[in-house]
Length: 101
Image (cartoon, rainbow, N blue to C red):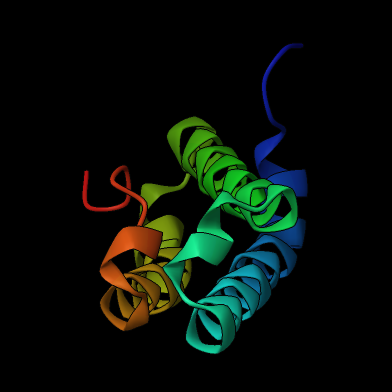
């Protein structure tokens, strides 16, 4: 079948969240060390793209989940902590506009 297997997505969820957090920390560090012009460099732009795609993957998995209570109880809190904390900590120009939606 097409789409993301919910069971597989659940197993890799924390790994996806860790990828998001590590990339976020690397982007923030690069901006702190080199200024916001670093956001235009290919490596940093690629890291931002991977962050966005990671969120899309998580969103797709959540959308296909057959156990909304498990998602709400076990997956949403760490996701909100990671994503909203990241958004709050990032330089305004390093924030992804899609995150609050």
